[in-house]
Amino acid sequence: MSEILNGDRGVKKDLSNPAIRAAERAEIEKLLPHRDPFLFVDTIDCNEEKQIIARHVFTEDEFFFRGHFPEYPVVPGVILIETMAQAGGAGLVKRKIMGESALFFLASVDKVKFRRQIRPGEEVTLVIENLRVSARMIKQAGKVFVGEELATEAEWMCLVGSKEDL
Image 1 (cartoon, rainbow, N blue to C red):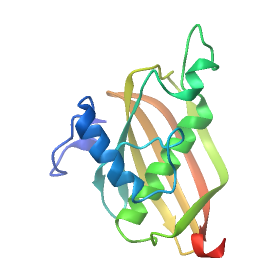
Image 2 (image 1 turned 45 degrees about the horizontal axis):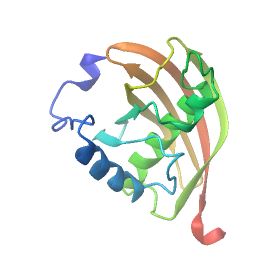
Image 3 (image 1 turned 90 degrees about the vertical axis):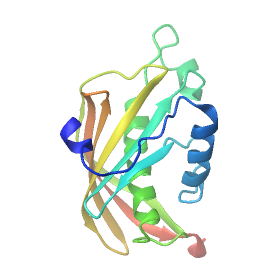
């Protein structure tokens, strides 16, 4: 994964600092309609035409850890898929490919592989590839890393709506 993150992509922000994490999440909230406890993107490190790199720290306070194997808490797979989709959507809105009123609805998920469990306190890096983007549909692929280790990968399609349509 280090080759993906190399290059001139800016300074990687320290999400262990609560003030930095809060400021970064405030910026993400401008891009996505999601809010706690269902916002799973803390910062976007890289946002290019073909690739988005974002991060999230799964703290021990996440709502699902209380009931998802309380004796051995792990992040549910569906949450990891949602995390990748949120990162992909946030990147497209940030680049103004999609408008600020855009809503993304998962339509399909394919080629999912869970290779490593993610535990409370772990920071994940999300590497999202834009496969096809139009005004009504988004096709993306993503990988979730913990450090250099691949944890999850998937492809998904989202249908695009608008807040004005509600």
